[in-house]
Length: 222
Image 1 (cartoon, rainbow, N blue to C red):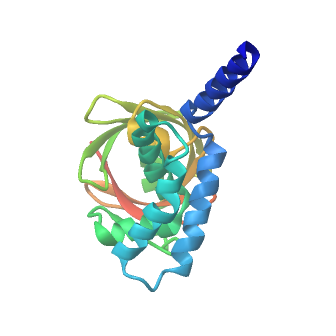
Image 2: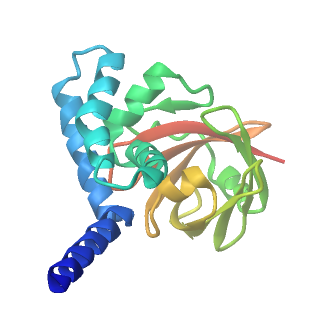
Image 3: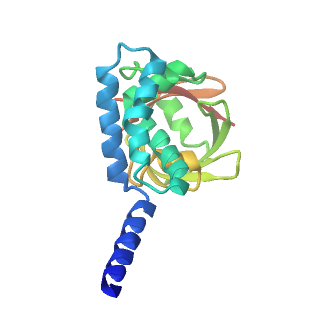
């Protein structure tokens, strides 16, 4: 009897530990890829119906595998990560809540900017840009790093590698910002191409490397 009780306790502890653990990055990305397939298959449905299917058929069953006190954290991580991994999910959210400073594109526009204007970018260290929700993010760029400073005091750090005067790639290193820490994993890359320069900002195209996502946005300089 004692032996059976011991075995039962061990099984319960083991099961509890499994459900208490957070999902691995690969497990989350695998689920999100399934979400993408579903969105492609249901693209003729209304946007609200597609969102309902995502949560009912994918997110909710996935969350049920974990302890209740972990579900909100996991749900947020899925929501943010899906916006990077799944182009269809990102476009769906943009249709429901259109961003002001960003525009989705299917190809990189023709560059209007002159080479000397691209070179002037490197002489500037302080920039800012608008988030999709309208918040302002202060940005510091040095020879090696791109550092975002958010209004809540958090930050993101990425490594910058130049590929000529008008193009560079940033690689995600770390962040203590909830959205950015879940949106990107260490090693994720983003390619930037300068398109135009005005009196107040650079118009820049960004490619989310490894996905089909491309956007045009404004990078203001001080």
